[in-house]
Image (cartoon, rainbow, N blue to C red; front, side, top):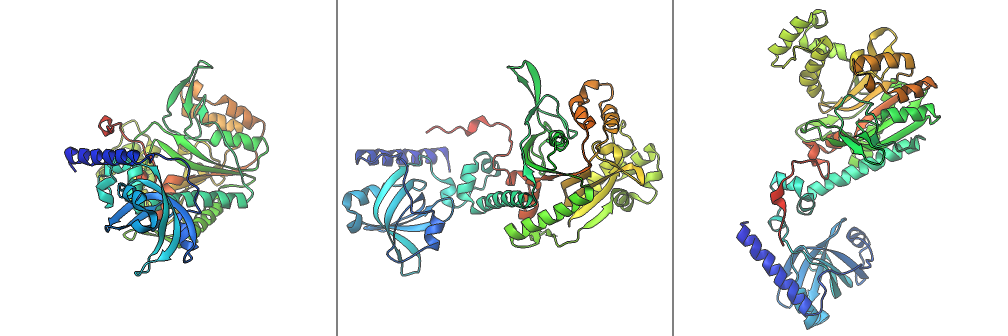
Amino acid sequence: MSEHVDNEFVEQRKLNMGALVGKGIAPFGRAFKRTGRLAEIRAGFEENKQVAIAGRITTFRDMGKSIFADLRDGSDRFQIYAQKNTIGDDAFDAFKLLDLGDHVGVEGSLFTTRTGEPTLKIANWTMLSKALLPLPEKWHGLKDTDQRYRQRYLDLIANPGVREVFNKRIQIVREIRNQLCARQFQEVETPMMQPQPGGATAKPFATHYDALDCKMYLRIAPELYLKRLLVGGFDKVFELNRNFRNEGLSRTHNPEFTMMEVYEAYSDMRGMKDLVEELITQVAQTVMGTLIVGSAEAPIDLVRPWREVPYRDLVMERMGADWFSLDKQAMRLKAEEHALYVDPAWGVDEITQEVYSKLIEKTLQNPTFVTRLPAELVPLAKRCEDDPSVVDVFELVIGGKEIAPGYSELNDPLEQRRRFEAQAGEDAQKVDEDFLAALEHGMPPAGGMGIGIDRLVMTLTGSEAIRDVILFPQLKPKEDLKSEI
């Protein structure tokens, strides 16, 4: 629509609102007591039953002395019917002034039309909220991708499939919480604003705490605080949390994202492996109703058992059996033959990780536990007893995306200090002395795991981009979206 046509629509809606006011009807009402949500009314339908319902008008069919319209709330759609000789001339004439998008409350009796449609025959109606702007594309759907993300409320109105994805997300999170609580894990909360970021390798968002006159950081992970709770005697804990990483945007990355982290004392990576298999398959079966998930073009089979393969084996399958016997220069040249960029400052582990992340991970469609990663990549996990160059961890990859890392957690404070110091280099301030002090008081052996909730929802629903499963994804500000009414 052109701006001129849009303005004409807005002006007509303002005129309709003025006409309603002239009839003594307030355009923005107050609370309306409903018999139930529309889905409940439909499920409990009985002929001649008296009910009160409310919702947004999404269709409006004026037939002269009668009007059919559809209402929609957060649960369903329901047809309503206004008849002039039933509600009276004044109420009927006012009803004709309603526009698509307006919210109304109606009271009346249920009946079934000749076409078999459950319908409410209006006895009384109440204006609840006037929509001064029209619904997108006359309710036929919002096509502009950028507008869909920036004005998610219109996306939810116009595209029922989008709302269904977020309904699934809500159910997935609820089911994860239910499953963990049923296993006696306790849900806790840890600080989102921290004096020192830790628990992952990522660039944090920095801020200033005026009251304490100190620099603070939005957390990049809750791990180090959850481990403090293991020291304090909580032996099975989890947190569904928001993390913040001041890094790039992509199909699988948003700077603000949702993570679930879980820790169990006296367990290990194997315990976490069993837990995540059970958790995801039960969530998929309960919420999606199937263990074949994803999209029709790229289905994912969640039937257990899931594949387990060492990181080293995957790399050699892709790059050749001699890969780990090559020197740095030979690795670099071979990686560049596969069109990979290799920073001259990278070591062999970093080059290998670039190969894995760019060439291998995306090929792992069905669930795969990638195990025995290089110790230099994972500073918070125990080394494997048979090979101290690798750590006792897994990365669960589904649909070509890392969904969940799981560790046998490092609880040796002396070894942890050595790794922190190696990671910090000359910047000794990056060593988290408070966390090391907690470890020195004795942390039990433990298994730990994180699940990327956004990516899990993408996987189960077959969504292509992380922005499709986050209600309000981060976008570059756009000033020209401001509307003048």
